[in-house]
Length: 611
Image (tube, rainbow, N blue to C red; front, side, top):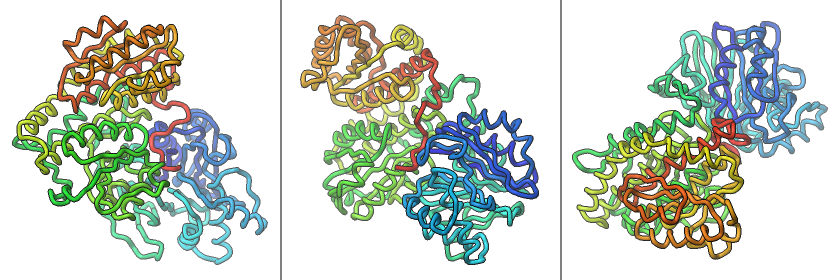
């Protein structure tokens, strides 16, 4: 969450910083600011609200002179959104300016210490502690900026990505990270820092990914990365081969809709390179049959939509491997003294590879001796680097806060993994294995077919976008999918929505259904189709208005529902990949008709890198 951009070069910094921050708006924020050295001193400009407020104030950056600076979009954690609490935060004399993503957990202790030294604080933020502590050490020890930074990061506890400039060193930009993403962009006569590559993609495609506790010094002529002992760290530059248009709307009104429409390609890009000569080939993982046979169970940890992928994965992996699977919310797993050891495979799922709770859960699993395998989208991310094995989704950049193609590509990797492991263990027949691969290869075209009929969902949304409460029900893998359908709707449309296992309705939930309540009934799992229809009858009898989703040919659903959307039929394990498309579209169209800020829903951020 939040966004950082830093620049040192020959061009005016402020316009470039504002443009970079614009590319990071999707991450979620409530205020923005920049700090630039104007030739005499640091000049700070900050504003609560959307980035446009700051941009208009600075005439798109033209009024702020200088060729070195840092910028930030803030998502409030310590202190309410305000001009004062916005970043950059500055030290008492104005000598240091700092932008920060993350949380300084011991900030109050440090703040009390500094206040006792006579230092005056103006904001409520934990970030100001970093700026004040930098200046305190800088003067106390009469040291250079590097030593001051090293002392600060040895003192603070928590997570951070920091961008730092000092008016005493107007030709140097510093950055450091711990448990919060930060990259360095490499240019000619100019260099950059950013929390996401999308911010600097227009200027460079060569980057360094920083590891924890690495300090980087940027000048116009070069970049040097150090550890805290001041030893130079050799970094391998990574080339970003995304087309710039992948991070642009490309004519679509919203990034979310663009990314929904990109799903056939994203799924194909994820699947195709891993199917060769009729077999699933996962070159990225080193698990042997003997290791798989030694696992007593598989534990999946994730957050949000990635957790919902995990719930689907439980059904797929248990069916294919016959190994018991548990699914746990990462924020719960890390704190409940989990019972895992070397006989447990922990599968970690995260789009960004930087999700704070998921990363902490991974580290806890490794501490306890578990084997770890991650599914992530970002190459070189913290979760990818720290896992024993990693499978990338290759979804490309996802800008909208509400995930669509990341969810779909994570599902695709789960199917690949389930077939691969089932075949390796011999727990599925060769016929099942071959048929599963064929069904997997058909998914992109089937998703395209559903998208081509999207006007039916748009019509239904136009009739129901004023609903106050919406319930999603399903059984088995349909229930697993209903969790994602409900989340997608509530996070972008702000409509109260819940997902329930259909068989649980009579155990309390049905008391919430009254005349006009919208119920979305998922009925693609055919072995339980008739039982789901019985549940639909129950809600209809209480006055519900029902949207039914099922596979082609199950026309019996029309007798029990008010509106039906049919989908192509595939392997039951893979049906969620098709069923999720109309749920994504429904959420999108409802939010659009309500006039919601679809790509940047309130209070939410793309990558949750703090607790």
